[in-house]
Structures are given as C-alpha cells and as structure tokens.
Length: 287
Image (cartoon, rainbow, N blue to C red):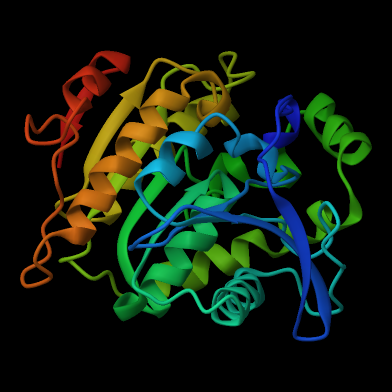
C-alpha cells in the first residue's frame, strides 16, 4: 500500500483561494489558459503542495486546477462518505462551478490516481487523457495489501500520522477499488502510467512485494497505455517532477490531437518536445 503521509511537500502552489461549492467551502488553485484543463488529485493524506514542482510547467501549457478534497487544507469537511464515488462527484461540482469544460486531462497520485481512474471510467466522455502517478491499484487492499496484515509499525504510523478524513478514505478504499474494477475501460483513452522503482519504505516483505507487483500491473488494466518506471520513491511529484511534467505534456498533446480516433502519444515520441529525456528517468515500457 502506497501511503503519502511519509513525505511532505515543502513548497506551495501559488494563487490558492477558497470558494463555496454546493454549500461547502473548497480550497483550490486555478491558473493558466487554454484547453484541455489539467486536473490534479492528491494522494491519501496529501495536500496540493505536492504538485508545486509540476505546477509551473503545466500552467505554461494550458489551464490547470489543483484542490483540496473535503476535510483537507481549508476545504470544509463533508458529512458524505469518503469513498471514491462521492469524491468524484464533489470534484465534478467544483469543475462545473468554475465553468471549466470537459474533456479533462486527469492527473492523480497514489490514492488520487484511484479516484481519477473512477472518474475516467464513470465519465469517459469527460476525460481526454489520464496520467496515473504511482497510483493505487483497484485491488490494493486485497491479498498482502489488506490492512489487517500490515506490520505493526505501519499500523501505528498510520494511526498516529493521519487525520480522521484520511482514515475514512482508507476505510473506503477497497469499496472504491472494486467499483473501479466493475466499470469498463475506454480503450481509446490515452493513459500514461508512472511507476516508482524505489517505493518509500519498500524493504523486503510480503507487503512490499505485493505493492511492487500491483505497481507493475496498473498498466495492464489499460490496453495501449504507456508505462514509465521512474527512478524515484513513491513521492514522484516531489522527487522527479520533470517526469510528471513530461507525462502531462504528452497527455495534453494527445488530448489536442484529433479526437477520432483518440490515440495515446508515446512518452518517448520525438514529436513531443523534451519527452525523449523522460525515458532516462527510469525503464520505459510501452503497452
């Protein structure tokens, strides 16, 4: 299980504001111009600061939105369950309130990647491309990933280091994953998968082996996706932001291409400026 609470962002995303959406205060940053809109989703326990090193490159290309889910930062807590279905609907309400039209390029890290997978499968016509940054697998909580089987130190660290809302999200994670798994994949949607070669805290264990196997299998869920193994720990947006920025550029390019048929741009395609360098970040494998 990849948990974001082991790393903290030190910089910030500029221009963060609050607004009332659906009767609840939501904190977000919105910048840039043009389409498609790039939408960032944070990991479990993480804040939008995690995107601070990726944000400048993205807003130079197009419009981008990063935000805090309910109960994070200055976003007001919600009484609704903290499962993916509610998270996706709250995000769509924010996008609609800001008059940001689809289709979107969805970028999700860790648990945020699972939420973005759900968004893309539930509303494929609203999604132009998907970028999964060391994303949680739909079956992450199955097998050795079951929290009941976690080592004691990890259970204690999670209990002491996370908020109530993060605990609620973790409790709903398996249900969210199984909802994702029950929905079909749009084979024409460009999907870019960034996977960490050096997952944080991944010492030899059944849990670490299980997490690495699931990390490798994410791309198999999306036929035609492009997977790049990044020489990084779980915190790719902070450790190797250039890899994330380059994947986003590829996704934006794919989204701006002719929508019929939609085709994923290769992360190493020479037509995408700077992306050849991305392949030196890790071991590239196209699927």
